[in-house]
Length: 193
Image 1 (cartoon, one colour):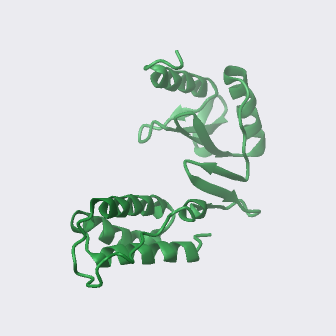
Image 2 (image 1 turned 90 degrees about the vertical axis):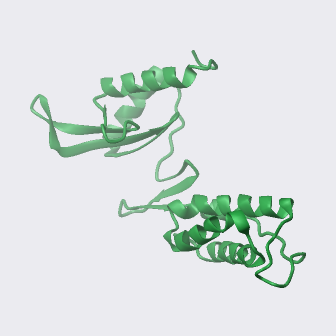
């Protein structure tokens, strides 16, 4: 079924079936999140969470003790073949995850932020209130603001600025281009880790 238009649905059904066989259950509040609780006798005890696993298409990310993780990986390999397994430092959905020695996890998108490019403002009028009408410049602005919004997941320090720039995307003035460039420079100077 892979390569066909219903392949994503078939994959979703298959991974759900396997996860259920492994004792992981989809949460009602988020069907892409699986949980497994320790058993107290023959019944799962909701008091002790044993494993948590999120699914995004064919990427899985989870938390558990090392032995449970190794067992899960062996079982998944039986059903799906070789896995790419990354621990302690990995990228998932564009977010770099780094597990520290104290088991805390820090998330960053700094590697993504470094790729954002400033908009050349030399050719813009000097009056900051002048509306920008050049379609190529407006497209660059929209693209940059969209790119700046992605790191909002791990950078709460930019939320107000991104909201301001997005609200003014339909009628951008020279000042909005300059603010966008300033925020990008800020993001590049200030790591979120």
